[in-house]
Length: 357
Ligand SMILES: [Mg+2]
Image (cartoon, rainbow, N blue to C red; front, top):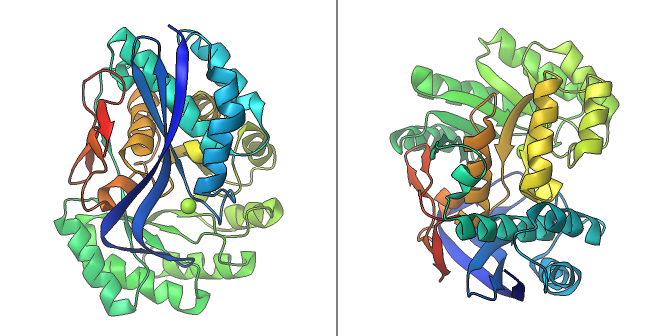
């Protein structure tokens, strides 16, 4: 069937509580949604988030990319040529990974719908449930423990703490949350490049001395400094994860070559879509690198696609796909649901999304 139309929508959804990290305070979720339509009227959806601080992409830039060069390579082509189409999308422009991921997901959604299979089944699994962690927003010491306990009551068993704002107080905040939740939840931290190698080693060793218990520490040092990342990884017992350091396969090869990290966070909006993400997960498995799949602040389309990938390929640690949980009301009809820390994917064609509100 021939793809005849490519449309973009601006999606805005209020969050039920503010999402606060070292870099920003967010009260709503905004993405650019792409909708592709074939000549039978069948549709596929994809989603590009705004990610100024990691990939440098904006909603307007993604829209321009999707309606321009990416629309040009898919319009008039058969939606059944999925491998050729996703490769053409990947090669159409430099960068623009969020826009490319949106088109790649829309192509997968459309192809899966045409076969009548859910996206997980289309990717090769009957699993339709995936576990996720939840982020505890950055805050003062007492507030942090209260928020962490609230998330445990919401049904989550894995908490992600955002640190890296102040190496001197990060240790006490992590230890306070650890003591507050006890054995009711596992804890991981994300420093989002906020420490120097020396600060990272000092902080992580202090936490280990205070009883440890961290699953892993994500991106302790600046993304481009592979030497610093490798120094931290070699110096501490706690597993170290690369996030902002690894966009695509070239970056992951370099991490493996230098033994710079134990784990990697794979995100569609960094690598350009399901096809590349699948390669990253397989490559990591081959080389003994642990994995999670994460997302940016995305809604049920982007998170649904990432969760489908996790259902099909698995990850070594619980994935980081809570973004759509923060929406006060789902911005789409159908799609994923959260039951505590479990994402339930609909066993309906594609992503199971009827329309975008
Ligand atoms: Mg991260």
